[in-house]
Each structure stands twice: as C-alpha cells, then as structure tokens.
Image 1 (cartoon, rainbow, N blue to C red):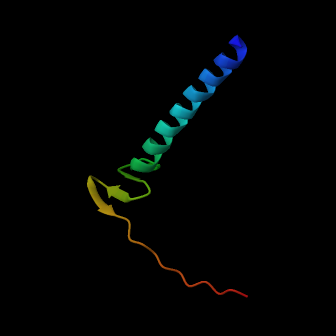
Image 2 (cartoon, rainbow, N blue to C red):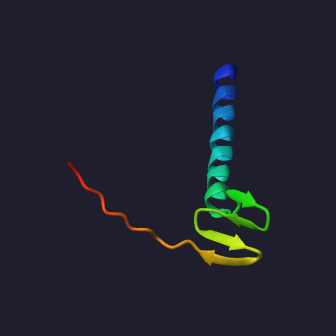
Length: 63
C-alpha cells in the first residue's frame, strides 16, 4: 500500500502543477518576445503600448 499511496501523491502533485501552469500560460502576455515588444493570446504590447488582439473571422468552405 505504501507504493500506491506515494504514486497517488506524486500524481496529485503533478496534476496541481500542470493546472497552475495552464492558468499562467493562458493569462500571460509573454508568449512571443522580441526587442521592445511582446504578445500573448489576448494582447500585444509594442514599446509599452498594449492593445487587445482583434478577433479574426474566416470563412471556411466545406466540401
């Protein structure tokens, strides 16, 4: 039973870590970094001026 309990504890810790990292990765604006600018999923910042990234609608043709 000791090995099973330690594996469950390790799995729970990895699950918690992955959940925290998922939240951090979707909330940060530092996905792409270049000199003087950075952008993420929601915003792009150029020389300190941040703006929301506009939604792009695309028309798909289904065959």
